[in-house]
Image 1: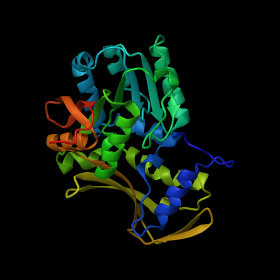
Image 2: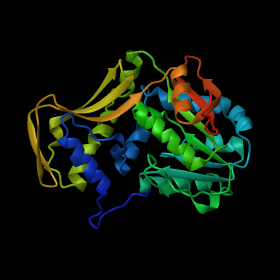
Image 3: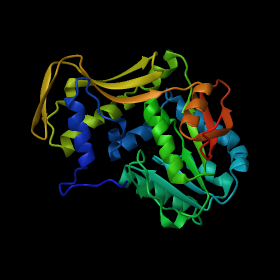
Length: 321
């Protein structure tokens, strides 16, 4: 559903997520709140970093296989992109499938509108209907695309930001939103060596650190926080048992601060867990999709098998063996 703001301009869901997260014994604030306008801009910078392989690998796959994907998808579908960001990869797909409409969905409204305008300039004949919403929940689609066959587009391995039960719920929500017979083109990152994974989330230039720590700036700005930002650092670690990279904001010293007048204290070394990036092997990906109500049709991967693009279809539920 669309983001709702108070008279003070503060999203009440953001307020709740921050206060609830800081009250937890193991403090955590969801990754979706990293994406204010500044955070969205920083993430786009991350995608161009030499350490960050997912974006260029996925673009390479779209360059190489979007024709094959387009043939399997067919013309005349409304493309619904969940978490569209800058829509940088979207033209590679749109040029191959002759879409009937494009619906980008993103939580960052200002960033969304700028991106939608740029894409409209590139595809002047294509109807574009930007929707500002939290795509982790069911999103009502514009009336104009209600009766069109649909293709969900979820690139970037964003599914990896969700713990598996939430990922399954989200895939089921997408199926409900798009309908039986809809298709889904989704990016999934593969499990690989820690020496590749950790630098991708802790780059030498410090852009990912700035992206993560921008959450503190946002809390101070929007929620009247008094967090001493120089008392924290970005930390990325590989959690092998859970097959995920974790991002944390770590206290460099004992620190006290307030958020909306509520007092908090963190000891040196204590962290706020901000993001997960789960990695999936080929069979893991198939099982996850099936659990979410989608059946894989085609799969494309790069030469090193670092990343996969998967085309799936929403089929009716089958309860019998």
